[in-house]
Length: 133
Image (cartoon, rainbow, N blue to C red):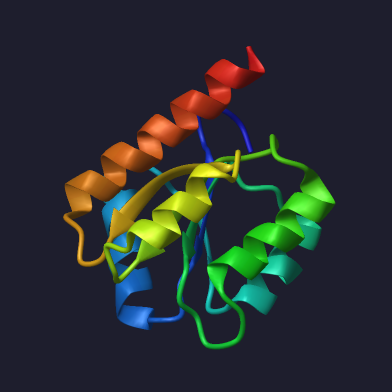
């Protein structure tokens, strides 16, 4: 995907939450969005696409966001794209784990305001672009 059209991958098992994120991002001008309903689907998508940013739910039934992140790290290293972690809990332990992961850009606690999601995604895209420069 080009700089003008970043690809955002949403990995979220709750369909309503995923749809809200997609609508919010599209209204903000981000048109290229993939939605994976679980960790396995996300890993399948990553065989075909490399997103500019991933929004990754921590608590999913098939595999945790941390497990997905570990698979990504093994395959892509720590530098290919930033990950925004979603959590329903404002849990200091999860945030500490994330601080140890170079790929974790930021946390969003559910529920979140669409404006916060949009701003965080735009900052992650800008961060990736500045790291590539």
